[in-house]
Amino acid sequence: MPAGSVYVLSNPSLRDGLLKVGKTTGTVENRARGLRGTGVPTHFKVEHSVHVTDCGLVETVVHRRLAPYRYAADREFFEAPLALVVSVLDQVVGETKERGAAKALEREWEAVVRQVAANGRADQQSRLAAFEMRVDRCSETIQGIYRTLRDAVEGWPDVTFLVHSKTDGIYFKRRGRNFFTLHPKHSASPDNIGISFWHLERAEIRAMTGLETRDHLKQKDGVWLKLHDGSSNAAVIACARRAYERAGG
Image (cartoon, rainbow, N blue to C red; front, side, top):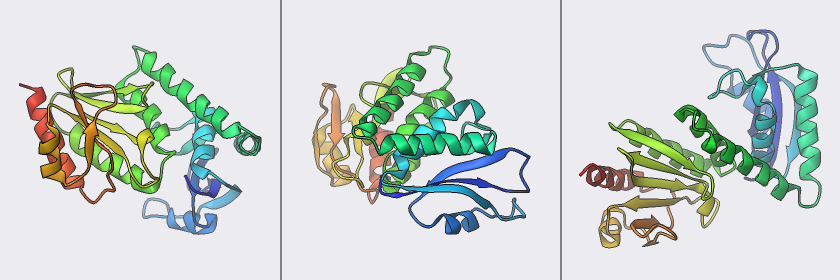
């Protein structure tokens, strides 16, 4: 993730003690103004912000450490004292400035995903929230690709998913059989994402997408789209649909 700011915002229209913690690669003031919508009659106030070299990494770790105070799993709001939130943010920022801190914080995220994935009682939303901590470490392009494809696939019948802690991928399944996988970790550049399919031949995928392919690194029946920049989403969804249909056969 590029350099940017991690911020703490408040709003008098929200319940007391509810704070938004997020990131932006622009100015925090513009971000605060942009958050005002029809559902929020008053402006957001910038309570605290810090400019960092990797705003995605810092935001991810701050969200993790504030997890007990999170108001909703799919929102960046936390019900916690302002002093506590500021202290956590400043602590994480300090850690990222130390030598090797980025790798240490990355391992912290990996531990979170393993913990969630290993918990048999964790529901799908919990697993998805853990995986999306990884996606939030990626570029905005990757975030958009991931959410577009995920939303399409999740609407199909009999689809479940599994977050794989070792590969940092999310495996979509039909009745327990893999058919489609997303791997933000294996991006060849900041604006690319790795995608793999099961039950499809390489030539078939190339013909449908026009994208480069190669065999999956570990799965013998998987074919990997090495590069994807978001311009071929419709073709990739078509491949996923074909793989989904064959997975049900």
